[in-house]
Image 1 (tube, one colour):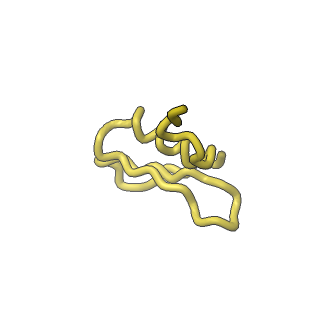
Image 2 (cartoon, rainbow, N blue to C red):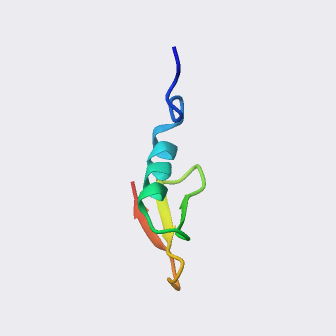
Length: 55
């Protein structure tokens, strides 16, 4: 039986990978460091700052 490419990937990491696929090229998407509330950081190629989204 073959596995899907993201099978076994942690759900939050899978969410980030799906998000990257939907955003414009050059957009940087990162998870915050472990230990705090989970957040996704998004920086557009032409943006001056980051957008932080709690998840």
